[in-house]
Image (cartoon, rainbow, N blue to C red):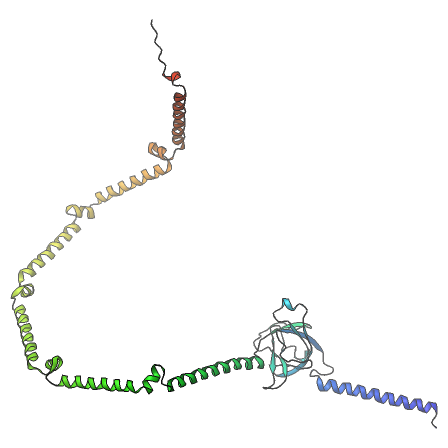
Length: 360
């Protein structure tokens, strides 16, 4: 039988073997599940979204499609009522790409293919400059439609299309049953008969127009209308000839030289009047050309302006009447005293209306 020492040594070797195996298994698990490397420095980043969208802990974090870390925590923050995006996502990323990740980068939920897993994608392409991200920094989030949103939207569209198809089917059934205007046009034989009768009547009207019967037929086929039109044209030519020869009222307006002379004389008188005004002749000419009169008018306007200014400033008798408050006060006092005097006379008329006679 083995000794106790040999048993203990065997147990120790088994324990060491199990421990080494566990350590190896843990390292393999970290290497298989981690994307940041075992000995690479890491930082924690935070992002807030309104819906996790099936994201799980351990999902990859990618920068422009390159794995740089993993999701290490997903939770609903306690102050969710004060946030528009209540779901907090914690990410552990490698500092190997810290030069590419700066403040202003945006994180979004993405799906690997149509039915692939959900992961975090960090987009820094639109960022120019900025400080490198520090540990526990918060990333801005970019809302991207999830597959559920697309399916939900497509379901609504399909429902609308289904309703539209059903309505079109009802309309076609209604038309095929001969109901409504379109149905009656297609299936009502009486409508065809009426249309055929209308076409027959139109054909009859056309035949009558082509024949010398009826008003339109006579207009188109009778020589009498042609003769009347020809006569009217001859009369019009006669009127034009008379006007050209100076006969009649229109001819005199066009050909009588006296009308031209009178108009010419009127224009000449107008030109003479304008020339007299420019020369300073007459009343209008003096008003337009006489500098002395212009000076008088200017002087008058200046005096009126001075008078108005003086009145506005309260200068002179008229100005004081308009602006001096003493006049108003004195007048007011006079009215008050007069009112008091009248009141006193009414109350004791004997005091003021008694007549005393003295005889020397």
